[in-house]
Image 1 (cartoon, helix red, strand yellow):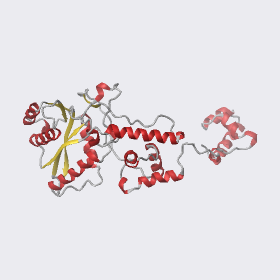
Image 2: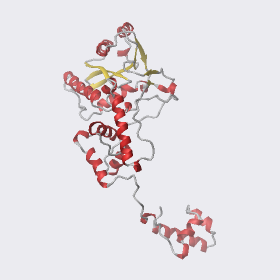
Image 3: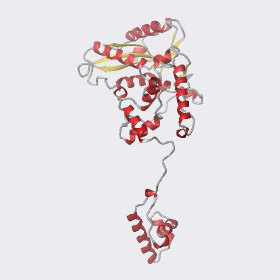
Image 4: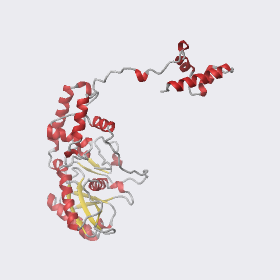
Length: 357
C-alpha cells in the first residue's frame, strides 16, 4: 500500500521522464510499477488516493464480540491458569467447567493482540544420521524411556542426579529418584522400584535409554535379563533418539517454581521432584496425548474424557455454526505411540514427541 505523498512523487517522476521523451511503460517499470497502475492513479487528471484504508468492512460472522474477547482475557488472567498456554487452558475449561469459549488459535490471536505471548526456546540445524531402532506401544507398560539429568546443588559445581522412567504410551512417570552420583547401581534401584510399582515383573517390556554409562553397566544388564526386559539405546551423539525423556526433563526445568539457583540439600531436591511428579502425572494435561493427564491415560480414563470434549465441541458448533469453517478439533484417542518413527513415516497413527511436554 503506497501513501498519497509517495504516489504524488512517483507520478511527478514519471511525468518528468515522459516530458523528456521516455515512454510510459519503461518509465513506470523503473519505479516498480505498471502502466496500468499509473493510469488508474491519474484517471480523470486527478491523483487518486488509495481507498482501502477508508473502506468499511463488515465484521466477520464468526468474530468474537468485545465481551467474548474480554471473557477470554479474564480466563487467561486467572491465578489458577497463570503461566499455562492456551492449549492447557482450553482443555481445563472443557473438563472442569463444561465450557467452550473459543478455539486454541483464537486464544493465541487475542493474547498476541494484547502482547501477552512470549516465545522461548532454541533450535539447532538438523543433522543426518543412520536410521534408529523403532518400537511401538499400543498400551501402558510396553515401552519405557529413561534418562538422567543434573539438578543444581547448594554451591557452584555440585550437582544431584535425577533418574526418571517414563511410559511413552501414557507419558506417566513410573519411577524416579535423586542421587548424589550417577551409576548403574543407582539406575538399577530405580528400575526395580518401577517394575514392582507397575506390577510388570517378567512381562515383555522395552526400556530405552541413551548411551550413558549409568544405563549400560554389567550389573544393570544382568538385572534386565532377569526381568526379561529388552534394552534399547540411542545412536551415539543423537539426543533426539530419546525424545520422551528429554522433553519431560525440559518440562521439569521450565516449571515456574524450579530453583534455578540450586537445591539446598538432596532432601530438598527429592521433595521438589516428588511435587513435580505428582503434578506431571495427575494435573498436567499433556499435549502429546490429547491434553489428558498421564495418570488418566494410564488408568484408561482418557477415552471417556475425550468423548465428553467431542460432545461439547459439537454442541458449541451447533450453537454458533458460523464460527466453524471445517471439522471440529480431533479428540479421538491416540491408539499407537512410536519411539523414533522415521522408518514408519507413512503410518497414519504414528505420533512423535515434540520438543516440549
